Amino acid sequence: MQRVMNFNPGPAALPRVVLERAHAEWFDFAGTGMSVLENSHRTKPYEAMQDDAAARIAALYNLPSSHTVLFLQGGASMFFAMVPFNAMGGGKRARHVVTGTWGEKAAKEAKTVAKLLGEPDPIVHSTKRSEGWAFASVPAAGTIEASAEDAYVHVTTNETVDGVQYASERGAALPAVKAPLIADMSSDFVSRPLDLGKFACVYAGAQKNAGPSGVTIVVVDKAWAEACRKDIPVIFQFRTAIENRSLYNTPPTLGVYLVREVARWIQESGGLPAMEAMAERKALALYGAIAESRGFYMCPVDEPSRSRMNVVFRLPTPELETAFVKAAESEGMLGLKGHRVVGGIRASIYNAVEEAWVSALVDFMGRFRAQHGH
Ligand SMILES: Cc1ncc(COP(=O)(O)O)c(C=O)c1O
View 1 (cartoon, rainbow, N blue to C red):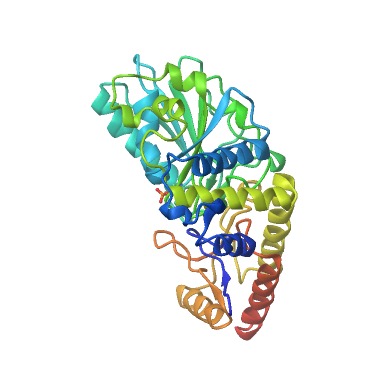
View 2 (tube, protein in one colour):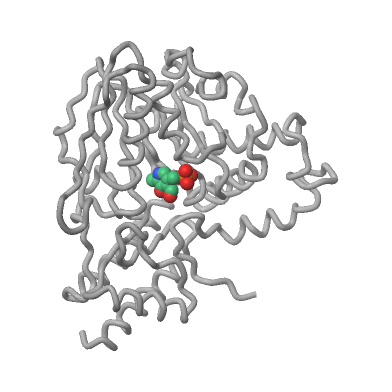
């Protein structure tokens, strides 16, 4: 069977070994005589598997016991609303740091929720520019000031559409704030070591680095969640999911199973340091090809904020970009078209994107450039 080189932004490539293991167990999950799809979530084999999935994610991050891992539904987009519903209250102001398209959506939902709850309008710190590529950097260190009096500060650690990522080792550090820090980590979850203990809440749609769509992984500080508001429907409260160990209602069972297998694969592959090192090699190969092209390929993102997950670049004309995507497809490289809102090219190089695929793409970029006279 011929599998393509998959550069999709999400749902995205999954490790082949994960697909093989799921396939091998497809008709008989954990000796139950039925697939994981057919098991009840209120059985020992299912619960043991889900606990194992949570334990593996906690182990990957060395998560402190103050925090817990949840598997919920609704996608990251639902948490754009869940977070303010839980965390706004008492007239405290929320702050949203907007460094891209997804953070903008989160801020918009927070404004709606604030209005509904009669809470103050959140403050939005945006790096959006009025011309050219809209988002090209994270805010400079020290520019976001938040006190313990603020409801929370929300960031998007990696902006999937715009190719912008927080990376302290490159001088693009996360804001150091006293207020509870909340992160949409959808597109760089389990891609590098990070102290999740310093976040009040992290949420991530699994469909980039961590599994399939349909399951949202949430890592939450239990004490913070307990202090959140109680006058919203129970299904929206983080404490409901915590108290019921993600089993208040039916969880996305197949998705959790696949997340467990991905976490196992990451552990077997050397954990998050190995994922980070691999991401760095892949990203540097692509940014190197861009730099070498002397302007034929152009990355619009400032160097310290360039994403190790979604490498975005432009060609001299939109026509050339269309031709690039088409020619790459004919060589088995899929998913390279930039997001419809921003255009250009985007190579998503999550954990399961093989280094050989990136080498093939670098080679293709060189040949395409030569064919077009550069
Ligand atoms: C950073 C980020 N946040 C939020 C979302 C939305 O996720 P979902 O489709 O799971 O709601 C995405 C999806 O691509 C994303 O990349």
